[in-house]
Image 1 (tube, rainbow, N blue to C red):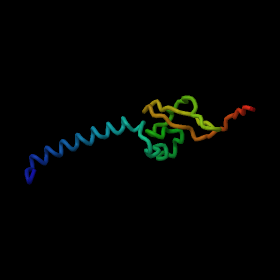
Image 2: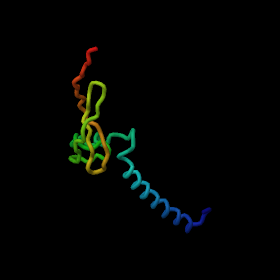
Image 3: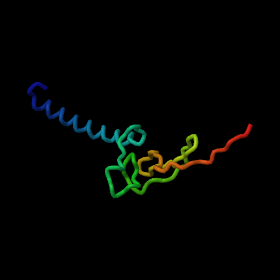
Image 4: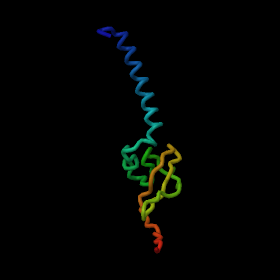
Length: 99
């Protein structure tokens, strides 16, 4: 490519295609990425938006995630398919077994 304008033009074309394909891959894998920034925080008008893709109004309840004495509701985004947890931590009834 040393000074060859034709080679630079070809490389520019390949780079543009690479960026488009990489963006499509990123958007496809984003729902399963851990540690990704919460996309719902970027839109103050829609606090119910999906934390994975940022689309609002597409969250559907999918049961509960249980911890030792609390639980949180699980949600699935119908736009991207990603799962997330609700903000409210509820206390669960603890059963004690007497010996």
